[in-house]
Image (cartoon, rainbow, N blue to C red; front, side, top):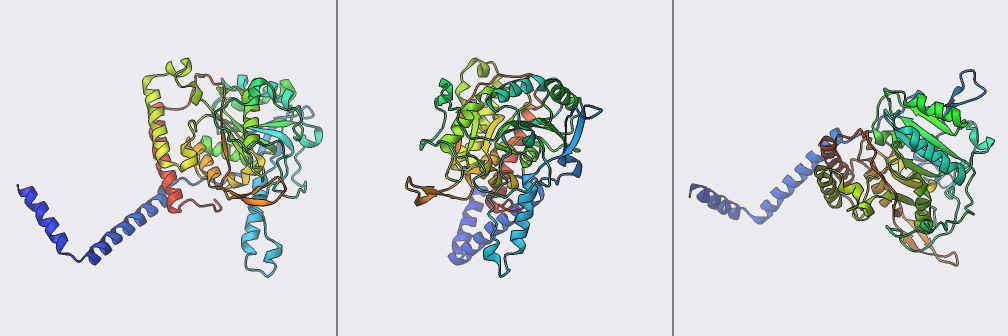
Length: 435
């Protein structure tokens, strides 16, 4: 009864307070709480580190070298984008501002048809089958680069363009988990892509011989300047490695592919088709591989009950904490994602997360990208379309032993990381600004 008496006394005291003062007190508490959370996020939210000079070079096989290998400077569209951004910021108040407006969606034209970014940490025992599958497919699909495309002189002058990705056939339909023409081998062969491809292996400070295995493979297959190994001096995490690779991509399309080869790489044609179906007038589009169609299959059923429970729990948290379009994606974590070149400037410069949760930040950035015009058949602008559309495409997948992920610990870290990520974007700790 004493507890009830105390509660009654408290309510009576609150009832005696004027409503204006009561609302003012609640407002002060709310503002103080939000401010405290903001300050806390400023300290704990991940901040990407700057790249070291040595991380802007790559190793490749070179038959003209005495050692058979060479180290060269990496081309970097991001550095030019960043320099132009700084120039635009410093010239805002000048009289010639109208003549020097820089389009932040601009990016240097593609030099090859495809860039494959492969994040690798101690993958010496698993990377060879994946590389063999990638090379076999890309040789047939894109061909080897022409000599001019294989060279990457930093002095080459190119003009940024919004339409860097070649324009191809588009369809007005959404592309979410359905049967693509690629499944029926009807993919058109007349895509106007630059010739060739490149494979960027981002070695995340591995302690094994991942670099040697990759370079020996490149030498044996004659993939000179096609396979490029970038070594990070200090471990950054998978997200940091992927972001670093994307900053140096030269392809009209850029695809993230895990080093374990769990996803069937030949399904890249499905991703290309999916991306073309939803690409907007600015040639921005994203297509992600999905394993959602495998739920109930033997591959998933054979997993441990704990793993399946954690997977479903994480997806539930994801639907609550992410914005609408991202929350509807059934599989955000598959390591097989394709981006059109024109989409990169709206995503890569604003990446913060360097751990496992980076996939979700990429998709959130795509969803929140600036609107682009909607153009009618006669060329007139009839509206705008917000964000970059994402196609979720079913792909072949199989379990591969040797995962670096600690099931319980990393699942908890991912849930915490997702909470911090969402809160940081909601409260303005993360913004579309320089990082």
